[in-house]
Amino acid sequence: MTEQAEVELANRNGRLHPSQRRKLLDFNFWAAVVLVLAGLWTAALAITDGAAAALVPILAATAWFAFVCGRRLSEVGSGRLVVITGWTHDFGKVHGKRPERGQYPIYLYTIMERIWFTYLVVQDRSFRLDDRALRERIQPERTNAVYLTPRTKTLINVLPA
Image 1 (tube, rainbow, N blue to C red):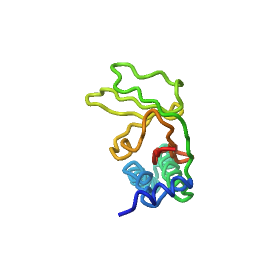
Image 2 (cartoon, helix red, strand yellow; image 1 turned 45 degrees about the vertical axis):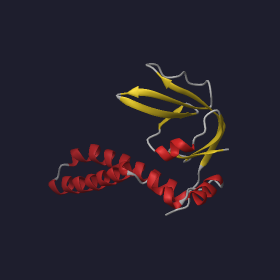
Image 3 (cartoon, rainbow, N blue to C red; image 1 turned 90 degrees about the vertical axis):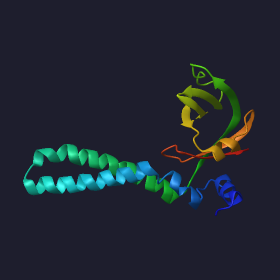
Image 4 (cartoon, rainbow, N blue to C red; image 1 turned 60 degrees about the vertical axis):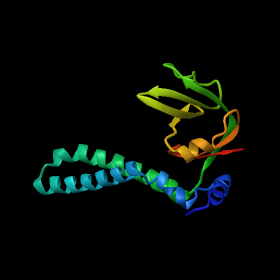
């Protein structure tokens, strides 16, 4: 089991901790890998059957999913993180209407979408906080540091600044 202090130290140094790789190599990544393999297999079948017209959309979709996989792998390979530090305002529970963007660089709100969900908004990019441990580390009405990957802007961690 990885110590939280090790993870925090790596993040504060702008690095992705090895235990956090699963946040990038998640179900979406592996689904894209499967689709790339299926696209290559289907393209090979189309070539052997002489159906060259079917190759263009198959190869286009395969190239897109390969790009998505490559981008995630490059994020894991580089291990770099971008930190955004700022005052974190908590709007609490909002009913019906989400808070207007641009009021705060970092803010939280909870809204009813069949059940209550909490969102963290960082520079107009919204992240649903499904991880309770991450949600508990965010300290509202204080300065927090939000750690994101540079290219895909995936939320990795939030720590008090």
